[in-house]
Image (cartoon, rainbow, N blue to C red):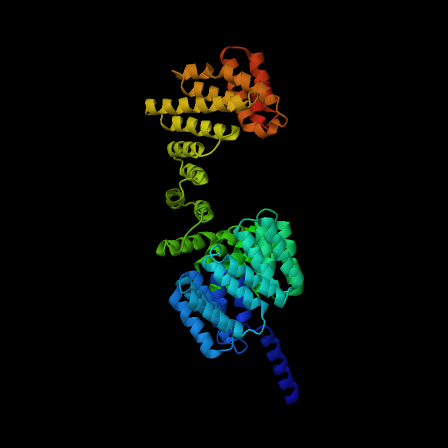
Length: 543
């Protein structure tokens, strides 16, 4: 039993060591020009037993150079040489710094020391060529060309040669040549991770299928590459295939070389991929690990907002998310969807004033985002504040290219705002004028639709000089409107408007003693309300 237990532990240890992080993961990211990520992994793996610290120091020094921190770069290169004086690449780093400082002779001396320790290393020749290229590719063109030729002489099949030439072509915006060089690098070494990634990056926005295919090729030979997993997920995202992007990110976040900052994006992708419960559960797990994780809090709420069973919990979650945002608005930033979903949750909780406050902040932060104004209009509508409803919807229309439904909605809001302001005739008339103007715009778009004509009748009825005048003011418009309505493919959709107009017309004809016309209009109502027994008794009693 003891032997079996020891064997189990040994096997478990072997499995873990197979996935232990080393300098290699950081090196992959560096070669793919993802310097921040390279630095993260290099520092994270620095004290791991399998890491070659002299190699880590070289790449950390190169990252520091890219960051413009020459002092840190010099420190790393010196530390690397102290650890392993025979590791040639830190001499290249020192030569790069001397070259950058204008000490050409000192740089050449450092490169010679590197060459002395390299034993005909084609990759080292390319590293030196890159040093010259980083400082001035034009001034040092001859040196670069000679170094590339030397690398070819040492090993024509070395992928670093073609990776470098691809980078040169990319810098010159020769995209076709760059892609060809990157592909050659993968042909010579199917483990040339950076070449796959750089090829994919050339195509990920313009032809994501090319990028996806190349990254799938990478993962077929190196399935544990965190870089490859991450880039494949991003390629699917760029293709707007959010479900597949989430699936790939799900694999990536299980990789020990993933970045904590990417965990929130997985919840984001689950949201956009429509896997709301999984997104909610994952974000909840992240919050359990770190309750201050604002990104996780956002995506927990966003996913929860799509789950009907979570409706009762949404207001409290919305309050907590907004409080976290307000506690540090510069760091805990909102996107438009945050404001919208929080406002929706508060409106559903009958807290229109709180929803309005949230949306007003959204308008202030993102004034170009028209939907905030639309949501504000409906938040005011929830408060029966029809004046501000109409005003806010008008602001919304000013930010978009309105269509028929937009103009009809605005005309309707304007009409009811006019009714609301009946005690202020001047203001009321302004709203009625706006209602007619918007109905006119809608009628130009769909001249055979009944709705604009009905709105004309509504306005005429409301602005009539007396109650008696109101009884006949809308007749002409309503008669024209019901003819148009009855020509619609599905009149049942407009039952409410139809019943209102036929009732008005029936009553008008009764007032003028035209019983036949009155009955004709009342009878039309039964198309929409066949079980109205009270109306049936009334109509049957007319003589």
